[in-house]
Image 1 (cartoon, rainbow, N blue to C red):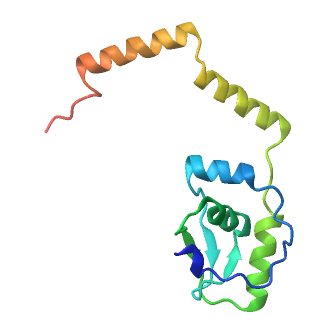
Image 2 (cartoon, helix red, strand yellow):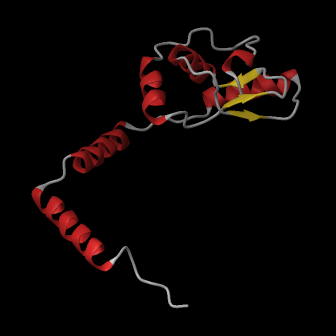
Image 3 (cartoon, rainbow, N blue to C red):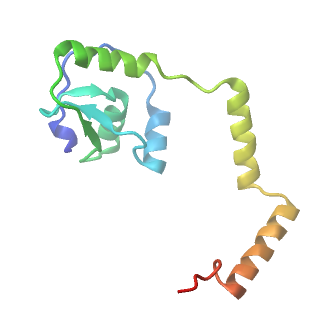
Length: 132
């Protein structure tokens, strides 16, 4: 949907906070979760994602269109999208960053293993061949 066509009516969240890291993520990975709008293009959920897209200069954004809901339903959806998400715990986040670091900077033996595996893949093909 064109970003310019999305209508912002009353919003529960008044302060979007710092969206610079969200913008960096969207620039690198794209929009991971579409924003939610009514058939008329009224924003229900995803105000920070929409604002990030605007600041990145995006002309279009992926949307999930939900059937016409009552004003009560739309407000409940906006509230629930912001209330029921759960952040990663510090242990989960630390584990994820350790795994990411290992992937980005593999040790000598892991590099050797991958090179040997890739050599054999090139030599013998990508995988088992199907018999027809």
